[in-house]
Image (cartoon, rainbow, N blue to C red; front, side, top):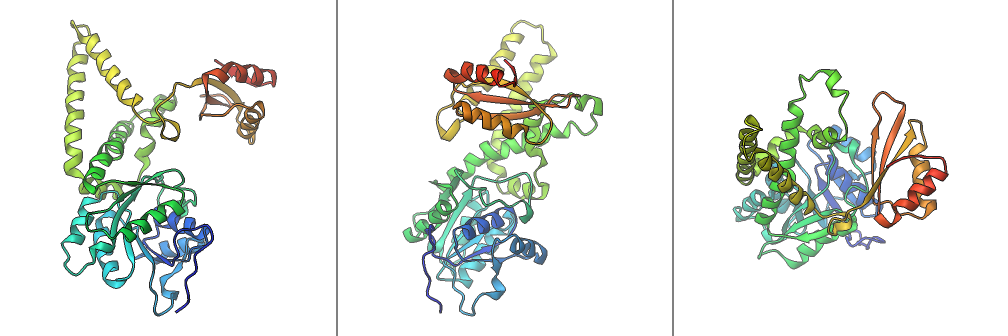
Length: 371
């Protein structure tokens, strides 16, 4: 057997076997290969695996040496077969640490604990809080996990070394490991991930028969709300089914608020109706304000300005370059197109103390600034 060597810049020694080479599996492979960690791939779909190999996410496990013994097995299959794949890996590679990245953790853990022949000390449930609306290895990105939380769900019986290996994977991919019990994780994602998906899809579904003339008026508000409605339906059927009990309670709360709003809007001029609308919107303000801002810090109130940019190649890059030359740090950037005009609008967010400086400097350099 070849002697393992620690890859430069990586915490994992390798080799790593990734079972499932879709968006997340292929992105993990790309990230590890960038660290020179040896990666092998296995996927039930030969074409999916071939694409992942072609983009450099790893090599087929079929070419591994006969006594192949991975340090880590990452199960990146669809959620409905994750538990089966984890159990198969635990039996097939008894020396390896086996993790899964399914978005619901409790059901996989329970399946492992129910198998008396599986070494559950070597299994660690994990969930990288990253993804895209697109799916498949063609959408994979080396930097997909950078600065994103990666939830690690150890149990009281977990081998401490196995937990460290799971965390090493997250660190090697630039993510931030966060330890959390599986039940707490599933409750959290029901609210911060699964509910937004459902609400986005419900709003977008109302657009199916909307006249094109009305949709032509759409701005960033509609795009923001419906962005994740483009997600893969087959994947979300599995996710919602696996976490249904936790999501149902949250949806009932939404139903109560929606019913309250409908009752108010049916009599919008009745005494107290406007106060009730304002209270509902204020409750939304309060909830939105609790979402952490940049780098996970408490939300800040940034100053915003809008710059008109010609809809031609290189204009956004030129704007960002000039902002850097002025010496102002960009806190956020949003892009939109002006309906019916060959120009775009770049909404720039900066610290309040830098707002006027940026307006004056950009104006003097010929940019059209709208305040």
